[in-house]
Length: 503
View 1 (cartoon, one colour):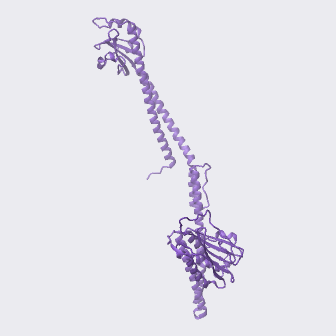
View 2 (cartoon, rainbow, N blue to C red; view 1 turned 30 degrees about the vertical axis):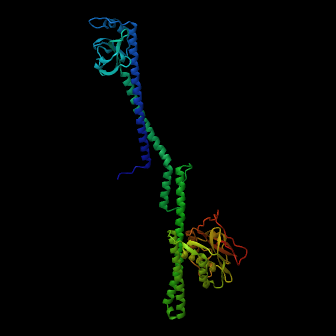
View 3 (cartoon, rainbow, N blue to C red; view 1 turned 60 degrees about the vertical axis):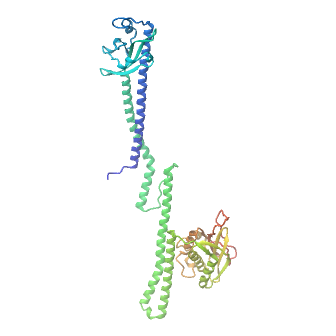
């Protein structure tokens, strides 16, 4: 395969080719228009000479003279050549039988033959005539033949042939052809050079974008951005779009790096604990029943933690892959009671209770909604000290079903609130009453809410507690209420009973 032609070169060739075609069509149009105009001028000259000769005949009182040589012979020999003398025009007079009677000396001894069809011209052809072309010694001539008619009896007594050489017409057309070809060639060269220059300037931002993209690929540095042209044109929009794409890719790659690092860190802790317990058992721990039971309990706990984390990661991967959820009627009040019963064994010294409980049914995946609510409940229990309270609630608000989990725990700092739903993010690991999770629970809550066309919110006051909420849209009604903005939750002054807010 030969070398590929650059886009700039192809653009230059294409534009020059189109311009050449336009020049060709324009040149042909000009050439044939001028040619037609010159030939029309020749025709006007022939008619003007014909009228002049007719005026000469009419002024001389043309009368037929019967002689052996013809009726017009004496008059023509004595007067015609002397009166009509135009160096650029010539004339010949023929009798009714086509015999030449006389002519002007312009032909230098050459005679123009009379076309046979000219003998058929009658008195009615005075205003039309017959036009023919001839060639004498390489010179092209055009002639006009008209009948000579006596005014007394409207009788054709002969034929007048006026001719004109086309030398000046041919010279003009040759000069025009040279001008068109030469000018067209110069115009094409200037067009090609101008197009190459303009395309180089116009496409220079594209070259800059290409070089920047190549440097990004070579250096693997997604923090670079392509320069944005100042003109508000297509290249400006292209550069802005590429920068937005690079920014999104940078965020995705950074998130992926953090994700891999966080997963590695979270897996290392339980695996290291399990390895340590296995070494304890290997060094004689099996001979000590109490030590063996403690090591097995630790490994069982760490294994459960690994299983939960793997399940959470699988769920997040499915949400990223847009796995289709089951959408069927779900009675949230019944679901809330199930979650309450499952959380009671984990409450310990924390008071677990149910607050507002409306009867609400939504369309969704029951298992995923239950898992999200369990995650919020476990999170509230972990960050609430003994003697505190965790309240589960369900109500309808502004066209949404509102599932809330409020606690009277340590709360969340304001700078941590924007990141609380990020994967592996925990505001403070030391606040967990137990070993703590992997920081995936709240991320799963957010994904489950968004998969059900809702959203998750959190409101918190440090030292007073937090309220997490899952907003799920209610099924359509004949006249659904529309809200212009998403509702918000607030934490009231009563620390023991914060109303829906979000973490």
